[in-house]
Image (tube, rainbow, N blue to C red):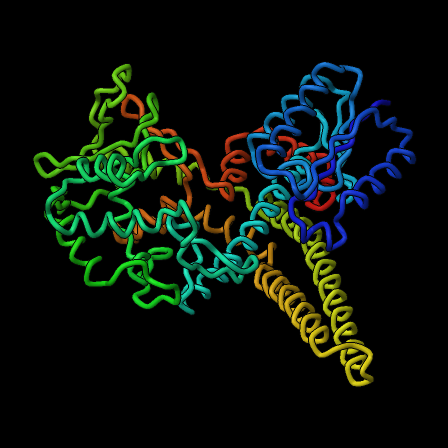
Length: 512
């Protein structure tokens, strides 16, 4: 029985925390030997791979399976090693459904998915997919908190700024003016000074800086008008910065221009603006709905006391001309909320049990990671202790001691940060899943009882996208609600459970 092996390490930290590629391949090869499976090809994704490379390898595996029909099995350590998004899960479903003999083995989770797998097994696959994604999101959130803390301390944590360069290691980078030959710092300073004279429009200034001063982009072309406007509007260059929607008036980096010059330029830029003030509040405004034909954002207008939504038809080929009234769209939204409700109490209890079982696997991973990180911290501490003993015994120089001590302390701080991130990300997935499930059952009532602004926030939480075509909305649910929506729509899984119930199976856990 021929199979392929799929292994992936998404971060360097995972490779160091016992989830290395070698550990995965050893586990899967041992499993294949026990099951008498012949691994004919391996698809390996190292931690250094980019997102595009990961995607390319996944597609290569599917193409290989399509070309080699005799290969019936995919071996993978866990669900989150194979995929963390529903689009790829759908592709795998399609592959499975083409042949009853095809199977995906998630070895560490003792889960085998195939065309005729029980509905609760497929449901567990969906749940593991959502929770793995949520765990990753929580780690990312903790990383963002670290960046916010850096901003609070006065250090800009964002991407590169023209005219500046960064010094220091990752997580401790600071910004200094780039005075090297060819740096854009001098051109940016002149751009502020020239525009402040009122003798230049943005278009004319771009031309002057290109022809007379020699400011060129990497491709040799002159800087664009919109790019110049962005630079002239950036308070970073006067010793301030904006980060994550918040303004920080005092920054630690060296300013390129005086504050007086920056704010003088801002006053002149504002006089050029002709933006309109929007006095109306639109429930589905701010790009919440897209055109179902051309994909452009739906815009809103008010007429005779009612709000209407329509496509601008910016794409000339778009045929959407119909205006949709807000009350009509809101009625459709309420119908979507109602479709999430699961009225079978026994079914709800069964889902809760599946969530609890899924949670135990994530906790195992979390605890193993923390044990490994604590072990790393203790090892570094031993090195520091040994280093101190060598210094006391005059076995090493003072300079060597200070250099190594600083190195070990930095390594320890990095481990402590990772421990902190994992502890903060230790969400109780059982409670998380239950909260999402219970919210989905009460969304309609909650929506009707909230203010207009709170309604819009709830819409953004439940739906990742809404498309409008011919006056009708089509929802794309946020990942956490996709599972509930899919299962509520697909009634055959409920029918299977009811059939089991009539055959005398009462305990939800026995469906496995």
